[in-house]
Length: 417
Image (cartoon, rainbow, N blue to C red):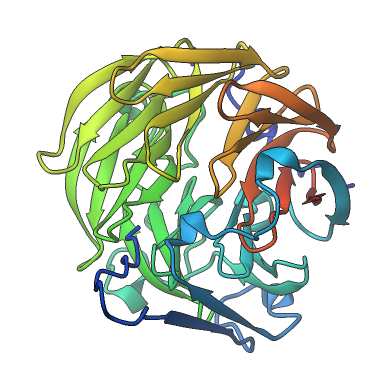
C-alpha cells in the first residue's frame, strides 16, 4: 500500500474542528407486472483530457433489471444483518480514494481527490473498467473565463435514481481563472479573502463513462445527494457554509441555503421533501424543506456530526456518525429522539446502510477498522481490520459486498455470507 503524496493538510481530515425516484409500484390490480430494464453499456476508449495514462483498461457491459428503487436493490438470500464480513479482495494501483460509491447497477466508483485527479470505475467483481481524469474544458460546457483544461479533485459521488448518471463533487478547481486551493479550516469571509473560488460538480454518464455536464456549486463542496424523485441534486459546501440545490431538469442552481459551519453529509427523505445536512462544526442536523428551500428545523445529535444515512425502506430513521467521539447514533426522524448510540472506534467517518435496512457499516479512521452494526438497536455485530485510515464505505446491493476506501491507497472488498 502506498502513502499519499505530500498534500499535508488533506492527509488527515478535521480531527480538531468542532465538528426513488421509486421507479414506480405496479399499480394495476388486474394488470401484468411491468418490468423496467435499464441496460448500462460500459464502453471504453480514447479520453480527450490530458493524463492519457489514466484512460480505460477494460471494457465490459453491465445490465440492470429492477422492480424496486436502486437503493433497495437486494442480493437475495439472508438479510444483511445475519451475514458475516470476510475480506474478499484488495484493490491497489494509482488510487487514493476519499470515497467509494456503489451505484447498485453493477458499477462501483472511487473518488481519488487531487492526489490522483481521477475517478476510478469498477464492476461489482472489482475489475477496473476505466480511470476517468478530472480534467475538463469548461468552455465545452458553455463556461467562460477558464480557457484550456481545468482540473478538479473528486471527493464524493451520488447516483441518480434511474441509474443513468453519477454526480461527483470536486474539493477545488485548478487552472486558469481559479483561485488557490480551498482550506480545511475556513469561513465564507476567510475563503473570499484568500481568493478561493467556487468549485464544480461533474456529471458522469454511466453509459459512456465520460463527464458530460458541469455545474458551479460552492467553495470546497463535500457531499452530494440526489432526491429519490430525481428532481434535485443537493450539495454541501464546506467553506461557503451553505447547501446548494440544483434543478436536474436544467442543471442549474435554484437555491443557496445557509446552514452553518462546515456542512458535510446529506440524507434525503423518501418523499423527496426534506434534506438532512450534517453540520460538522456544530451539534445538529439542519433539516431543509425542499419545497420552500429553507431550514425548517435543527435536530440535536451531538458534537462534530459528519455523516448521515436514512433507512432505505421507509425513511423512519436517521443514522449519524460523530467524528470526534467515535459514536454512531440512531435518530427517530419524526421526533428527533436519539434512540440508540454506540462507540465504534476512533474518529468514525462514513456510514453505509444495507439496502434491506437491517445492517450498518461504519469506518473508523484512526482505529483502522470497520464496524458492522445491527440497525434496530446499534448492537455491534463485527469489527474487521482495514488498511491505514479507512475513510469511505459503500454497500453494493447487487452482491451484498461492502467496499471500503482506504485513504492511503487501496479499496478493500468484504464479502458477506
